[in-house]
Length: 166
Image 1 (cartoon, rainbow, N blue to C red):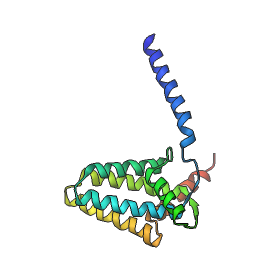
Image 2: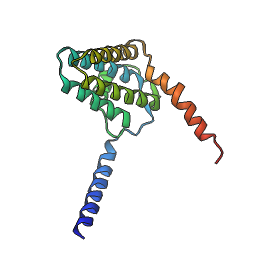
Image 3: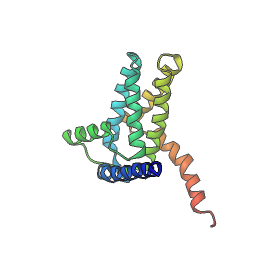
Image 4: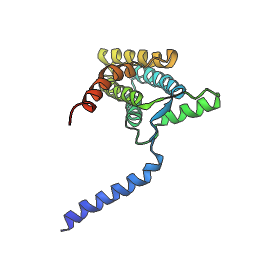
């Protein structure tokens, strides 16, 4: 009897915590594109330092930030800093749809986990250079490769599912 109460109590505490943290959640379907370019620059810096100095913990923190941005449940620390920097520098706000950016963040999460796992080998260095190149494309030229993958891979699947007869 007390075992089931414990499970219900934990579930209740989790639901209470989730409701409380909901006000901090990033529920927007649009994000600021200039802030995401600044985030990409931060990703470049963290990846370079993490690989060059072989600091696995930096790469794991970056992976955690990618996960936060991909899920949208909580505000990402890198995105928070980027928004403050873009406000300070008076960058023009450019709202873009968040779906492709979240998909790109999930790809970044997977890539960063692989980099953290292989950080001291040639595979890790190659993946790190690839991540740096992709983040540089986003930061400098505003080209999101993960967003293109989303548009060519995920959107047709969603359209097929939505248009299928029920």
